[in-house]
Amino acid sequence: MRIALFVTCLADALFPDVGRATVTVLERLGHRVEFPAAQTCCGQMHVNTGYLREALALVRHHVEVFESCDVVVVPSGSCAGSVRHQHAMVARRAGDEALARRAEAVAARTYELSELLVDVLGVEDVGAYYPHRVTYHPTCHSLRMLHVGDRPLRLLRRVRGMTLLELPAADQCCGFGGTFALKNAETSTAMLADKMRHVLDTGAEVATAGDSSCLMHIGGGLTRLRAGTRTVHLAEILASEERAA
Image: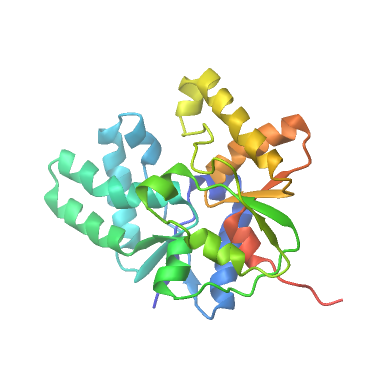
């Protein structure tokens, strides 16, 4: 099975360790991961702000890059959701039914990391060791668009050395929402304040999620508070191992 990593813009530009961690986990499980170097943005930002015509070229390019792969893994519920729920729509709006069908075929083989591990590879214990108090934030796209459910929690519960703490009001948005945080800054800030309060109420050392964008938003707020709680992507926790003394 050819597994291709779609690393996403945010991971590529700001959080490269997330991509590396994704590869580490899959290679530890005995799988070879390819990185198609021609990959670019999936076009989600364009679609979400109404620039469907400009997104069409990105959708076409994404399909051309990934349609030969057996499986595509994405360490982001947000970008996985865009591929699965926006790409074919963009092509059909442009009147390109052939591209829409190709996009649907790629989308059917595209999985967010926890989906791939649990549903496709049938694994919950990835051999991780992470001796910290951790709370999990289910991001909006993973929760409401992909319906990943408890898959990330099933993976986290099998991490050795870790104490998993329940996050109050976990299903509430953190307030990022891409350009939402820019266009509605005051509302976004209020939502972030609620999310940070809930994270800090758990007493966790680490807040984790499957999207770097939400972690960037939450982590930025926690850093400004100097709260001592940091954010770490799910992939990075799953990639952690106990080191020999």
